[in-house]
Every structure is written in C-alpha cells, then in structure tokens.
Length: 66
Image 1: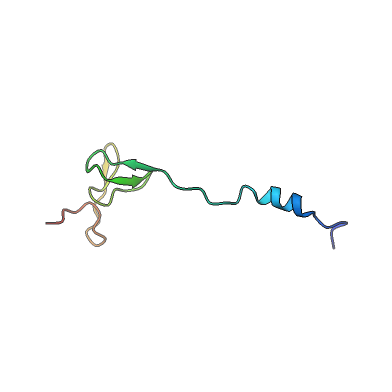
Image 2 (image 1 turned 60 degrees about the vertical axis):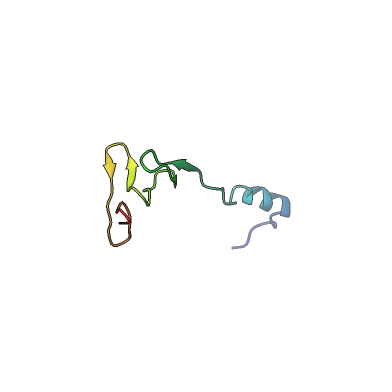
C-alpha cells in the first residue's frame, strides 16, 4: 500500500537532522597520561576504570614495550 502523499524535503531533512556522527570524547588515562576514549581500554596501561586493568599481550594492550 502506498502513502497518501509524498513526504516533503523539509520533513525528511528534519528527521535526518539527528543522524549525523558526533565526535567522540577523549579523556586522559590516570596511569599513563595518554589520551583514551571514554569507557574504553587504554592501549598503554590497560586501564579501564578504577580497580579494572586489562592485559591482552596478543594485541599489545596493557603490556610494557620492553
């Protein structure tokens, strides 16, 4: 079944106004001092939040570079 009338360009654009991508926020890792994405693991130290550090040697996350 077809709609009764076409949707106008203005109405379509108003609906799509919220579809744009937003820049992600960067925070500073308290352990390494490097910028990291919010709620993500720090690549250098493996820090996520207080009391939680992740170590993934295969990906180089939370492993010393020595």
